[in-house]
Length: 527
Image: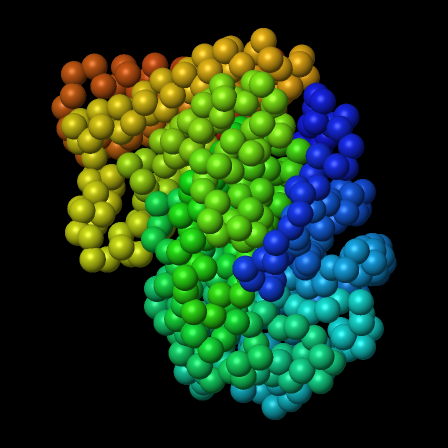
């Protein structure tokens, strides 16, 4: 079951009218979508009934629900569940799209070549077209597909996985156009995602998209690649004025605590969505609701979903007004202090999970040594802000830190801890006007937020302290500090065990202990 359901207090006791937000104006964009990740039938069914209150008219079934066409034919109950949910969605006036990867595992042997796929083999494109003809014939309940090219079995842009004489842009174009033929024949919506890791890959994709019929829609994340709040706006947004574009947002907090801790940031969503709405071609948004079953609805992070809804309904509203509306609606007279506490979460989490704006945290979990070290450069902010030399310089320093940089990193983590303490103080001021369930829910989340900030500081001192030592810098007492930080992680793992936080991030016992063990081994091996 989805982890955060039914949150608590009088919110869970209030009737449907709480989420009927009064007279609704015509939305600014025609496509307003929610994306589901977990195949939890009760949750999806119940949540779709809320869609009308947020003026949502489309739902996407993705990830744990479906990611490959072949899953509909694997003999499991998946196809039946999705068909039933799609019919239910139609009864609620919702269109249904399914999330599909290509190229996937179902490519027949005759089109394979040395473990990869050969696009130039006779019959390949006919086979691919036929695959989607069959999909739409067998499952007319699905109104369209959302196609993604990365994190697939055979990436069409990677020569080690896919062979062809076609240039990279032409590969994208041929794949999209072939599937589009089936979509157009069956009058299905077709949306392609620009989710790719590297600027060069985006360039290939963009050149390929110029060869595609304008009826094919584009979906781009609000940021390039993945959910890094310090990244610039996605360069794909506005790049194709004559093509309909949907902007993808993460309300599932995949990289920001998975809705277990607050990441409540109307200002951030306002900043992104206002920019997007000014760009040519933008016709809608798609908001991810849950990741691996950790849902934003029924938690304080629902305010992010509410922000997209309100900004789309009323472009004159401000983030400050949204804060007041939402907190008063949910917390009544406690709203001012609850708002103060939750407002701090954006900086608390960003200063904990990121290092001077650089990405090292692994999807809300403490990273392994290899993940953290590798992602400093592989996910560097510098490649998306190439005109700002300071990021290239900082990347080099993070890869080869000295004692001065270590102290700067730890100062950032200390600030996160101080802000987490401040949030707990604000909650104490709100307590007299909260009922027990409301207070317990917020207290649990803010206490975990505080522990999260502590754990990530200990990790930063151990990880970057080790790197300073490995660079050969002689810093008195630093090895002892690293040893103490590692021991601190072990203490935190015990606390997580006692709190029942054994596996779900952030700051779960298993992830902490595993990272501490690795850092301890590396330090022991360091001469």
